[in-house]
Length: 195
Image 1 (cartoon, rainbow, N blue to C red):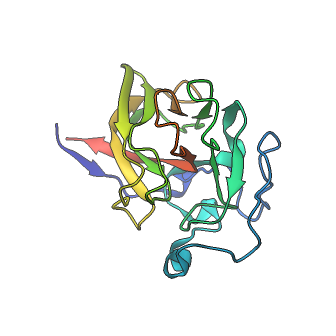
Image 2: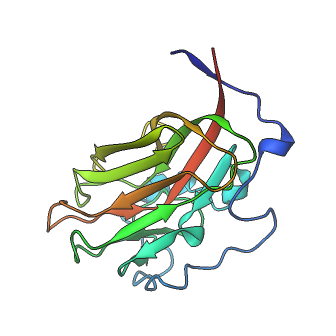
């Protein structure tokens, strides 16, 4: 199948946070333990996307996700989307997940991209499940590898979704290494046209 990105019309640009609305940390996530400006890769700070509403497509940030288990905020390893990212604290393996559910303006095909920061402390086998109109697809991501889109997003694939909130993307820590952290940050849905 061949797909090409559609020009994003204003009606299709929908984000988890409205333009101008101040982001608030997820109420179920534990606070960041790092001081403001304390980062391990200062050269990556320029790639932070502070406002998810400025990204194309439909973006669901961790601030609007459903959390199962204890997750903690961090800003230690840029880049990230919004206020920061959350991680599983290397604990509760198999009992934690983060589900990103978009409000899609129309049925159709979407390229799904996942945002995560990367380094050697990340899990190499993070399970990610995409629930779409034709079923579910599960893959395992190496979060130590640099995402190819702006050092932040990696493409999970192109899937067909129904309009509304029927589809979702879930990150889990099931089966991940006990000494590595699982990262959850944001998911982007970019409308594409089937050729």
